[in-house]
Amino acid sequence: MKNRQLYRLAACLIGAASLLLQSCSESRFKDCDRLCGSWSSVEGKPDVLIYKEEDAYKVTVFARSGKTRKLKPETYLLVEENGNLFINTGYRIDIAYNEAADVLTFSPNGDYVRKEVRP
Image (cartoon, rainbow, N blue to C red):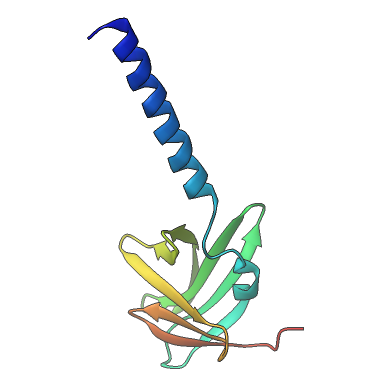
């Protein structure tokens, strides 16, 4: 390859990388604040708490474990990818929000309703 071709290739790669980074920074799910709060499972699964810490949103799952059934909270980062929300617990758990009904759906854990009324 000639130098001119290498410069063109480098310019194209830099342009493509900047477009990719720009598209990643613009979240399609812009208002995660409305997800914040305490949520209770309709099906008796562990309760969850969603909150904002600095620039990140986190999900804490309050599960009981072992013979003593001691409460063991585990916290995961809420991730948005291609407009879809999920947490990674070792495997992917997708999260959907129905704003009209104010219901969260965790796949595969089912529906969650808000514990307290939002102001």
